[in-house]
Length: 215
Image (cartoon, rainbow, N blue to C red):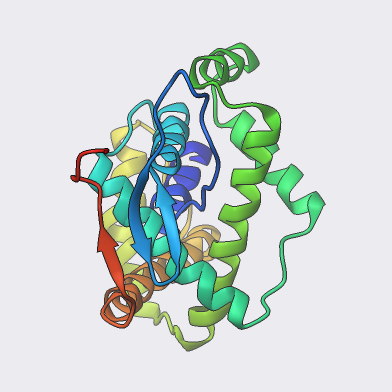
């Protein structure tokens, strides 16, 4: 469940990555211009390494670039709104949850070694992730209402079948209510965020240079 939750956040709330890779890994170049900013090929590679580390697979270059553009839009608005950065203790807790999403400490360390990401890299990425996800939460949560019928439907179609498929006794509706409520709120935040990002892209000047050959 922890890994699934982290994956949802990493995928739907848009990881914010900005860094460089070792010179022997890639010859860096500009792959997109977003208003007056740029996105580098090394930004794509770092995002892909993080995805490989967390999920065991990564997106194609264009998908990763689209995600980075979406990150730029969210980050730009959050900065304009003077939205505060996450606290250090929240970043530390996020890193601990990430570690616990792996079966063992050894698995975490081996996947981290394979990715080439340092502890400092992970903390920086998680800080950016929290910044964006916290902003989207603050922007959309207040407008979301989850009714009792939606909670009941989720319980019957998701919670009960999942427990039964594992040979487990489903939790009572009351016991599961809090989890279901938050899951539906997060889904609604994701849906509203996606619609908002699609609209926002039309107002941003984007030049995609990914498929241009490096000169």
